[in-house]
Amino acid sequence: MTTGKLTLSWLLLLVLTLSGTLMGEYARPGFWITVSVAVITAIKGRLIIDQFMELHQASPVIRRIVRGFGLIVPALMILTYLYGQKLAAITQLPG
Image (cartoon, rainbow, N blue to C red):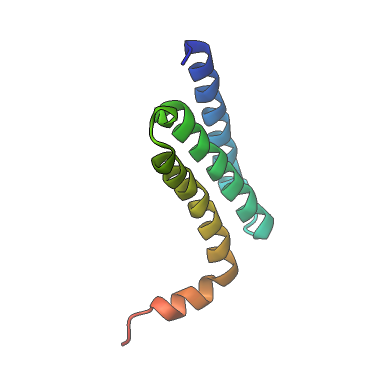
């Protein structure tokens, strides 16, 4: 991995993090904001997995599992937005 590629990846992570922070601070909550944050999370996760965890050296099974986890988290963010009330009702403690 070249230093230039790592630096570019780090700068992209920085820009994505700042854009997510700005959205969280100034945007109104809504479906498309949630999708945007989920997409940013997926891109950041993939960058970290591919560039900084160096999984290109790992076995394909491990690489697929970790990349799949990087996609499951953003999908769960969207599902939580869509079905948050139902999930809260299901997981609420009795009492």
